[in-house]
Amino acid sequence: MNEILKSISSAKTLNELDKVRVSLLGKNGTITQEFSKLKNLSGDEKKEFAASLNSKRDEISKALELKKTELEILELKERMRAEAIDVTMFDESGSVGALHPITITMNKIIEYFLSQNFSIENGPLIEDDFHNFEALNLPKYHPARDMQDTFYTDDARLLRTHTSPVQIRTMENSKPPIRMIAPGAVFRRDFDLTHTPMFHQVEGLVVEEGNKVSFANLKYILEDFLKYMFGDVKVRFRPSFFPFTEPSTEVDISCVFCGGKGCRVCSQTGWLEVLGSGVVDPNVFKFVGYKDVSGYAFGLGVERFAMLLHGVPDLRSMFEGDLRVLEQFR
Ligand code: PHE
Image (cartoon, rainbow, N blue to C red):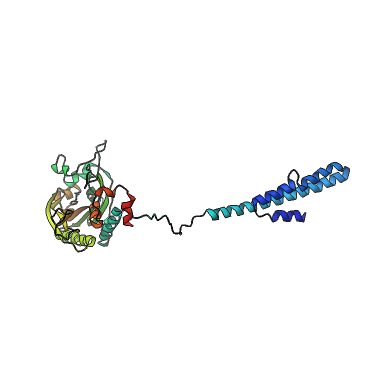
C-alpha cells in the first residue's frame, strides 16, 4: 500500500497521475484484479477481504483526488505564468502613442493662462441663441451673424460657433472679479483648405469692478502670451470689429516662417493673424446684469496655433488620423 501511495504522490503531471489511476483502478488495474479474486472465496473470508479491498480502494481514490487538485492548481499557476504579459518589456513593433498636436498646443496655451491666475471654465457644445448670439450683442437678423455660418438643431438650438457663450455663462453664474479661459470645440458650416466644420478655440475674459481694466491690460497679456507661445516675434494690434467688444482688435504676429520678410504662408505680408480681442462692449454687461465693471476678452483658434507652431501646411491633416502625420509628434 505504501508503494501505491508513493506512486500517486510522485506523479508530476495530471497526465502521469491518470496513468497511475488506470494502472490501479482501470479495467486491468491491480486493485480491480484483486476484486476478481473475491469469487474464489466464501463466507467470513470473502467478507473480510471485500471490506479490506473496499477501504484500500477508498484510500487510493482519496489520494488520487487530493493529488489531482494539487496538480491542477500547479498547472494553472504555470499557465498563468507562461501567458503573462510583461508590460515593462520593450515593444519591438515600435508603435508608441503620442499626444495629438491640437492637445499639445491646447496644453501649452492653458499652461500659460494658469500661470497668470486664470481659471478654466466650460460650457455646452449645443447652445441656445441667447448665449451664442443675443447676449453677445448680436441681435436677430444682425448682419454680423453671417460671419459665422451656423449649424442649427431641429429644436431651434445650435452648435456653438465660438467659445464666447462661455463668457456669458460664467458672468451669469458669478460676480466680478472674473479671470477665466474657456477651451473647447466649436462648429461652423465651412469646409475647405483652411476651414473644418469642427475646430477648437480658447476664449479669455477678464472683468473687474470699476474701471480698473483697460485696453492696456489686454495688450500686455496678449503680447506676453504670444511671446510665450512663439518666442521672439513682433506683435501688432489691428483695428477690427466684433459685436461684443468695443474697441475691437485683431492681433497679428510677425510671420514665424519668413521672419517678416514675406512668404507664401503670410501672403507676402510678413504678418499672421492669430486672434481676435477687445474691450468688452457695455451692451454685453447689460445682458448679464453687470453694473460699473470693465473688462477685456479675446478668442483664438487652436488649430491655427498648432499649424504655425509645428509647420503643418494643411488643416485637414489634423483630423484625418493618418499615423504617418501623428507619429511626427512623439
Ligand atoms: N468669438 C470671436 C470669433 O470666434 C473671437 C473673439 C473672442 C473676439 C473674444 C473678441 C473677443 O471669431
